[in-house]
Amino acid sequence: MLIEPLLHAAMPQRHAGKQRGTVMLIALILLVALSLAGIALVRSVSTSNIIAGNLAFQQAATHSADVGVEAAVTFLEANSALVAGVSPLHSSVTSGAGTRYLAVRQDPAAGQSWDAFWNATLAGSGAVNTLAADGAGNTVSYVIHRLCNAAGAPAYPGCSSSPTDATSAGNSYGAGVVQLIAPRQVYYRVTTRVAGPRNTLSYVQVIVAI
Image (cartoon, rainbow, N blue to C red; front, side):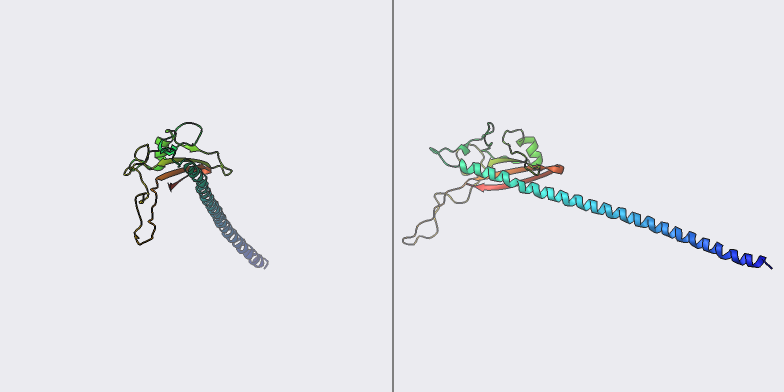
């Protein structure tokens, strides 16, 4: 008479044990899934931060190029005046403590990048001006080219220039009208190279007419 109640009492305990084992298995699976999701989220955030940081460094390097451009423009303006028909800008300057300058145009070869041209040709030409690194760690270098085929006084054709010159006049010839005369301006190209943190490299070019 006592055997049957004992059997009935033992059966629910075995069933509860199986339930507890199933719940534990499901909990472990969920824990693993949540762990993987957390790892993926952390990696995604880390990658986004790296990309945003790189873009910020690139933008800062591009903005730093303005310093090189302003230094080049200051040099051109200070040396553009003619003295007895001669200007310091008629000849290249590739040595000394002052600003370096090229009176002759140089361009990359077909299919050559500006960085390759800079390293292969400009870096060893003595024409590169390098400024002290700024607070952001960007080092600005710049080269000034006069867009002419030869040194000396500008010759046309042979130099890139504005389409007007001292012999051109306005299209109005009415009585008492003053003819418009504009001096020919020579074009100069300023190429600025900025090397910054995280191997950031930026090139900026500006054409100046003086």
